[in-house]
Length: 74
Image (cartoon, rainbow, N blue to C red):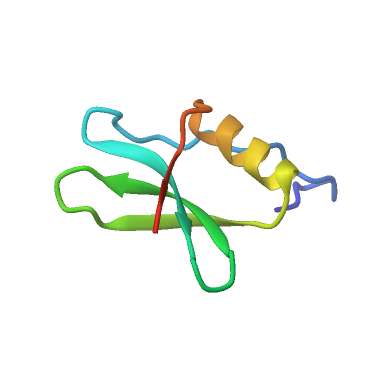
């Protein structure tokens, strides 16, 4: 989270293969909680990356995975 000089690091780029994985928002219908992650297209398993609390978090995740095309899954 913090670099050697105490300053916050920028968003690190996620490395994943778009042909086998996709960036998704895992959403709860009960409480509205959203978690951003990478989903395996074959198995459907989601590797959670970060909790989305506001628009800035969503923008950070989009910058990390290099896409703005996120599908919501419930």
